[in-house]
Image (cartoon, rainbow, N blue to C red; front, side, top):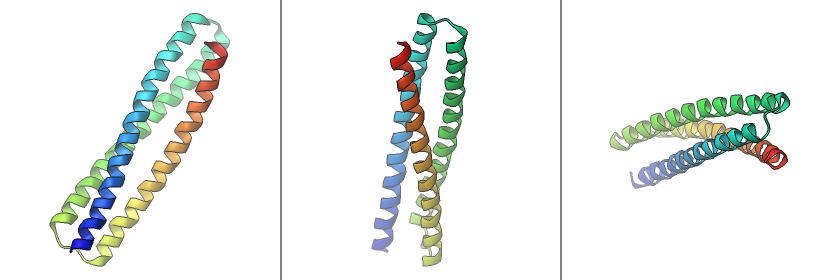
Length: 129
């Protein structure tokens, strides 16, 4: 039973780290939206507006994905809490861990995509601010 508690605490730790990472990325998106507003004020041309609209659409989509990931993290934390309260067999523990790996892969893909967008936006800001 003690090894199961360590196992569950490790999974909970991962979930907490991912939750904090999403919160940080959300705050970055807020900051980038402010910077996009500054670009519009300094450069009112239509070419820039097309690029800005593209960035805004990507930010909206990222926020949707962040919401989905936060929901999955909440559901996973509930599942782990239930598992901690009830004695489960090894097959179910593996199943929970397997789901955690899938969420880990989703987070990894999201983080990579976020940083690619961040790099493109930083290059855009360097050019137009």
